[in-house]
Structures are given as structure tokens and as C-alpha cells.
Image (cartoon, rainbow, N blue to C red; front, side, top):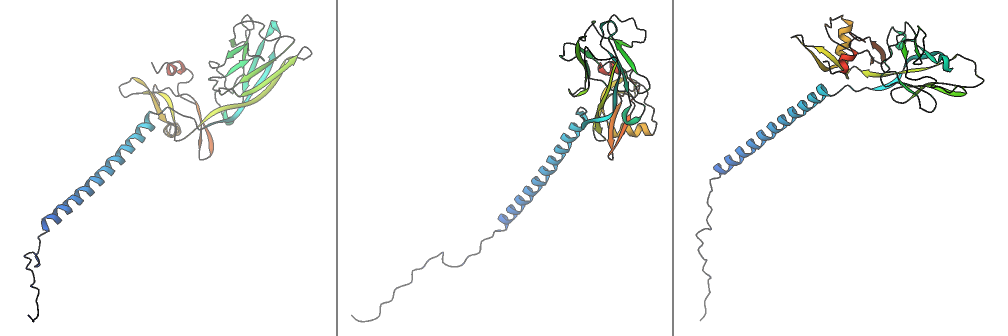
Length: 268
């Protein structure tokens, strides 16, 4: 049977275009993004505050640390007698950068050649205004300021006197033998710890209630107080050398050396 054959078009009830309301979804996404951004900003602020807090705590409570060690003067051995009956050493100090000052001998030692004799210079007070004399234990010399334990600590036939700084650096060495003429003399660089104005140094600070407490105070503030002649009260500040604008300076300290033992005892 002839005739054209038509394929009926199948009816799809979903084929017609339909609109979907997405406003609720868009609002949800927008709110989510705003919340995420808000949380992100909050987190960054919190992180920033935490970092600032850590830096502040670190700077406030960190112990004083030196920038470097360097020569700021001259230490002289004016006279050295190694003979048993009159063993003695006379020291003098040029002062820090020529200023009236005190040598800080913390950790310094006086030794013989083999290190069998070691004398701790930490408690020795030496200013640039007057030399000091160190003698053997049994010396009756009225000019002796300090005595070491023992006698005949230097070998009469040949030995050396050595002065060592706190970092182990040999400042001066005087060697002799049986033919040497005495007294011997010599000199070496006085090495000091040099602080920057941003560092801190340990002091005994007077609280407003009158009590004294141990604190680490900023070098810059201490220099400012010194220049403005701010009264320190019962404060105890050790002398120190500092560098400011590439120039060396010296703070003579407060209540020093009278307060040295109190500071060493945590300001008690």
C-alpha cells in the first residue's frame, strides 16, 4: 500500500522550557562567602595580634644580649715581679674610650704559663684614676690591694704571666727566663661588651612602692635618663659600653660597685 509514512513525534512533558527560582541558593552562597571573608579577616587580625604579643613578650623578658666584643681601651701591666719573696702584679687602666670609667673584669683571669695558677679578677675594682696591686698571700706590702692564695706561684727559672678576658682572649703575656731583668711590664687591649641602644641590660629597679626588683631595661632608656639626669633612687645599674649612631658611649652605672653584690643576688 502506497502512501507516505509519518513518524509521530513523541510527546515529552519535560521538553517545554521551565524557569527555576535560584534566589534562595544565591542568597545562601552570598552569605557563605561573606561569612568566609569575615572569618578570614578575623583570623588574620587574630594572627597578627598573636605575633605582636609574642614579639613584645620576647623583647620584654629576653635577657640582655651583647652586640659584640671589641677593644675600648688599654690594660697595662705596670710592674710584674715573679720572685718568690715579692711576687706581685700592678695593673692600670686607660679608661673606656678615654673617659673616667671602671674596668669590668667579670670572667677575667690572671694565670701562669701552664694554667696551674689561676686568679679570678671578677671582684677586682680598677678605675682609670688609680692603679691596683695584686700580691702573694703572705706579702706584707701595705700597698697591696688584693692577695691571691698561695706563694711562689710563678717559676723563678722561667714562666709567663697571662691576662685572659671573659671570652678566653689573651689580652697580655709577659714571659721571662732566669736571665730576665725585673720588673717586667707590658700592655694589651681592654675588651668590653658593647651593646646597641635596642638591647637590654639587667638592673635592680626601684618599684613605686619602694621595693627593689630585678628587671631587664632598655639601653636607650637608660642613656636617656642619664643624659636628662633622671634620679635613679635605689636603682642599681652596672656600668656598660654602648654604640649609638656608630659612636661608642659609656654609662658609668648607678650605685656601683656598692650594689654589685645585690644585683648578683637577684636584687635581694
